[in-house]
Length: 293
Image (tube, rainbow, N blue to C red):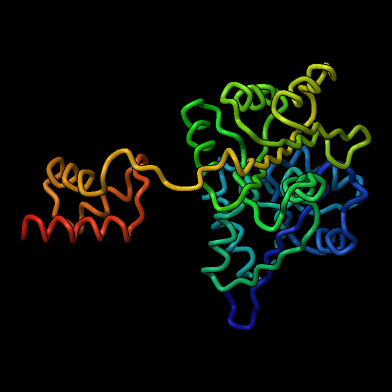
């Protein structure tokens, strides 16, 4: 790069999630002015850019090529060009590709500027009516039942009661059925086609929401943002251990030929472990007092 050439900037631009009128004036101006627009799906992005009357160079930056393309984009920015990252809908990098490019830009000393706007998860949270003093976002609901059960347990053990996630319209009934089948005590708010003409919200217990979906009939159309509020009575109020910390450490030591320190690390990495690091360290000291060494 020429020493007199200042690097360009990387703009992370939020786009509408359904209603093109939600595009911010600032976002539109930046998309008009930048040299390159990095898009998750160029075909879908061309529709939005056409409505906004923007004619810029559109380059694909989907999850299958983002590692290779990051180097290309960084090279262009180091040469003085500015790049805007957009996703199919909403704020980039929220359960979408783009993080690799941002990391590479940061490491190269390129300014990264956020241009806020729509986000389906935040919009769904805002209309849910649930406690939003704190919440967790989990991305897309897992496809495998084992992973779904792990997620439900995490939700029941979390310090917050409100959770946001996404789901495909083809699997939305599976999501609701999972909470029904597991007798989950919670309230749900399923937001379908947010900001569009026929935007719909389904609210209530899992059983009530399932009945509402069935009554609608064509519920398997449009994208869903889901908000779930776990009842205080359903949440785990304390950690219930079925195996002592000392026993887990001994098992790790014997199985892996490990010392106490490495055994603590091994147990912490075990997905079945529910002990904290401090609890395991205390157990290791207890074993040392009991058996020496």
